[in-house]
Structures are given as C-alpha cells and as structure tokens.
Amino acid sequence: MEKLWILRIAHFFVDFGCAFLCLGYAEDNIQFYLLVYNFCAFALQMPLGLLVDRFGRQIKVAGAGVLLTAVSMFFLNDPLIGVITAGVGNALFHVGGGVYVLKGCQNKCTPLGEFVAPGAVGLFLGGYFTSEFPYINPLVIFILLVLAAVLLFTKSGENEKPAPISLQPIPKKEAVALVLLFLVVVLRSAAGFQLTFSWKTGSTALLFAIAVMTGKELGGVLSDRFGMSRTSLVSLLVGAVLFIFSGNSAVCGILAVLCFNCTMPVTLFSAYKIVKGLPGFSFGLLTFALFLGLLPSYFGFSMPDYAALFGVGACVVSLSLLLPGLHLMKAECDAQ
Image 1 (tube, rainbow, N blue to C red):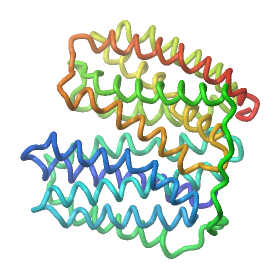
Image 2: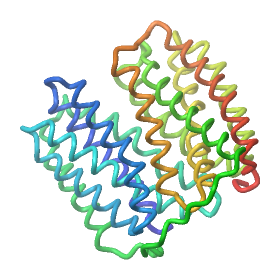
Image 3: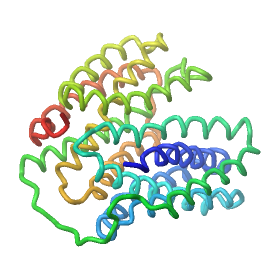
Image 4: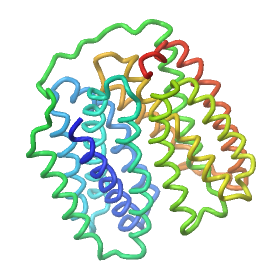
C-alpha cells in the first residue's frame, strides 16, 4: 500500500485541525458544537462508507476529506458551519483511507493500526496548540492543502473503479460476533472519556496520548505475530492489573491505556472479515459505535474519582465480549 505513509501523516493533521478548530473557536456552547462535530465525523461514516463501497475512489474520497478539513478552518467566525464542515471532512478522510487500508491489508492487522494510530496524538496537540499558539492556523491550512493535493492528484496504485454492492447474508454466529465487536467499541469509547486522572496534565497528558497511539500500532503487530485472541487476552488482562494502580501512578496509567488500545485493530479487522465485500460499511459501523460511546459524557456522566475502576471494568468487560466474538467468527487464522 504505497499511500499508507501519506494517509498516516494526513490522519495526524486532519485530527489536529479538527481539534484545533472545535476546541479553539467554538467556545460558546462548546458542548453543542462538539456533539454536532462528532455526529458528522463518526456517525456519518456508515452511510458514507456504503457510498465508497459502491462507487470506489477511496483515495480521492480521503483527499476530499482533507480538503474539507482545510476549508473548515476558514470559518473561524461561524462555528456551526466550521464544525459541520470539519466533521464531514473528517468522516470522508477516515472512511476513504479506511477502505483503502482494509482492501490492501492482505489479512493483516498491522496496517490498520498504523493508519488509525496517529490521530490520537493529532487530537491532543491540536487542542494544546489552540490555547498556546492560535497563529498556527495558516500553517495547518497550508499543510492540509498540500496533503489534499497529494491524495487527489496522484495515482493510488489500487483499483478504485465503481463496483456493485454484493450483499451476502451473514451467518448467525458471525452476526452475533459482529454485535459483540460493536459493543466492545462502544465500551472502549465510553470508558475513554472516564479516564480523567488527576495526574493527566502537561507532558504526562502528551505521554498518555502517545500511549494510545502506540497501543493501536502495537496491537496490530502483536495480533499478526501471536494471533488476535492471544493478543487481546494478554493486553486486556495486563491492562486491567495496571489500571488498579493507575489512580496514583502515572506510569501504570499510561501503560494501562496502551494495553487497552491494543484491541482497536482487532475489532476493525474482525468486523471487516464478517461484513464481506463492504469495507466502508464495516469501518463506518464501528465509528458509529464510537459515537454512541461518546454520548454518556456529553450528557453529563462523569466520575473522575473512579477512573481507575472504570479502566479495570472496561478491560474485563471488553475481554468477556471480545473473546467470544473472535471465537464465533473463526477468523484467528486469517490474522496470522
């Protein structure tokens, strides 16, 4: 996949730009604007994914998403238009890039982790530079425009021609597995917003974001080397133990969140294998799960004093859902 490297860079700057815009210039009624943004960025990926499955051109779609993200940053005085444009741009980029990576992953989880991982650090730094260096906006726009041009005007090396959607019935066991995977992603998303430790500030917060990124990349590599079930079992068990001590230990908390995120490429890859022939829909289905997981925090559910407990519970429950799901879909051999 010759475009994976540019998609990784673009993912960082797309998420950077979206965080920069949404957190820096939507200060009035920010909760509403963030909800609108996240709906556009995550929930819309499912229908947009179906369109990409039907009409192809996934690299061009990703490039259009980067371009829209750049355009959104011109709407500094109209937050609603800005966050909608940024959200749609984010959705187009992710689903276009996601389909490209899924189609070219050759039954490996590693490329999925590599594609998704940079966004975590991009989001953190976008929010950080918003408050510290607001003059960075023109530079971010320039970088996004360059990345958009690269994706829009260079050949992808992949077959992106339109193709009819082939709907195949999902066997009962795999349908149950898909539901379990969906619930795992909802839980991961919801738990992520509860991991608000007192030590998570400054450079430690950056290390936290780097741990999220590293976990996603490492999870793909380990899944290809040792299998998805083994990787999920070990990473979530170790993560649960580390979360026990995370309330007072930044080191344990950072390592725990790294382990917790190792299953991200596992869920993406597994959903893709179940929903055969519809990589865009499978990718969008799990981002819709992410959106659902965001909702409790937006509606006021927050218990920062119990962050460590939420971490332990999220690991244990994720494991109890994920292992049966992987067993039902019988895709372990495909990732090895």
